[in-house]
Image 1 (cartoon, one colour):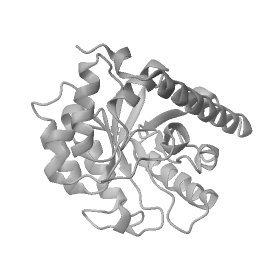
Image 2 (cartoon, rainbow, N blue to C red):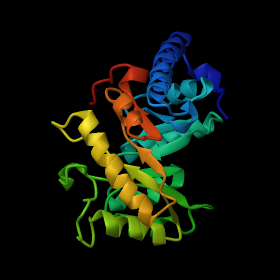
Image 3 (cartoon, one colour):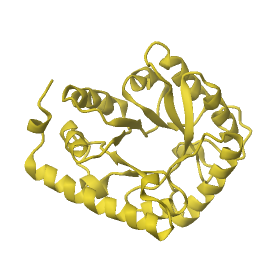
Length: 248
């Protein structure tokens, strides 16, 4: 096991601590503004393009949930973090190809981007023999009904990508647990409009699946609006970790 403290530069730890303090204050203030308890909102640190050392530092600062969106980066990073004796709750939040599910289910505690019955079925099958507990799943919703950027489609009877069929498939899967919904505000939509629409969709889903109480919405730029409309999870990257390194 690697000494986790030796992997984190003191100056970087200080930067992360400052960013974390700012984000925590924003979340707390947003909760106060709408009369919610701060404990109702979980912050997910989105660490894509950042090194394992940043995940280790954040864990040392009390961050429990970490998000990644590319398996080819997330899998080795999760392994490095585990070797350092650190065990955050890993959320896979990016678009997921079915040929990656066997890898993802080995390290992810949560998959937030399930948007088709075929993907739900592939994840369910991949859990067999690879996990000792159900995989927590958020069904991704296309708020504007355009699935091109990912997301199942509300009010659609499409047997593969309709929101009703996808949530039903997840709920019926032995290896999966339906936690709730996830969405990204569509391009060109004001966050208030987007998350108000999402809240209405979530209410409809909970009428059919009362256990689906989680709602993952809001990022660095719009987390306040998301919290105002019931988000239980916010996904924060740049506001916490700084501007992302350029991808090669």
